[in-house]
Amino acid sequence: MPDFSKQLSKYIPAEAAPIISQWINDTACRFKVTRSRASKLGDYRAPFRGSPHQITVNHDLNPYAFLMTTVHEFAHLKTYQDFKNLVKPHGEEWKNNFKSLIQPFLKLNIFPSDIVIAINNYMNNPAASSCTDLNLYRVLKKYDTKISEVTHVEELPEQAVFQLKNGRTFQKMEKLRKRYKCLEISTQKIYLFHPVAEVIPVKD
Image 1 (cartoon, rainbow, N blue to C red):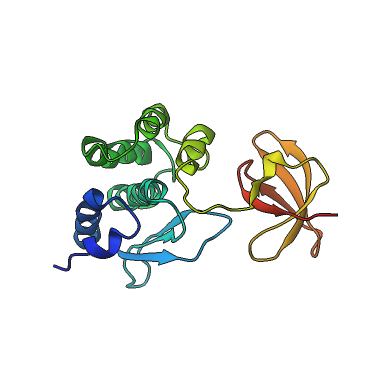
Image 2: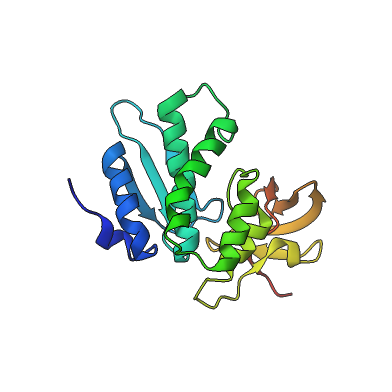
């Protein structure tokens, strides 16, 4: 049984790595560290035509955000094992699995106290992603080490123009409940952006 702890320790707290390594082996999961994606922090894909479970996590997350995202995706894997596609992606079954899977890491005392408080609040009703819970997302973001000129959609004035890291250009429009309507300049299509989506303002 291969031990992925050393490779995983590049991305998550070293104490947590053996647990994730064990999960990868137990589930025969294909675990991939990927390029940064503006639309998501991680992803789970169920087995299909002989392919194994697959989890991907963005490479540029800080260790705590990387670990939280990994646990989130393994909760999807466990929910699929238990219920296949018979339940909602982030329904009660997934929430219960997430709460169960995060426990070993809370017992390791690897999270700073402000993240522990945010996780406990989040666990009262885990959202679709740690990104969706603005409080938890902002606490996790405090531990980013790289200094970036990136700002968040919610900080831009209406009608402001911004770019994503891949160069796509948008104009911010009005807010719809929890997300902002944004117009892609080149295609004139409307997309919905999370308030804390990271973007690069385009100067006039």
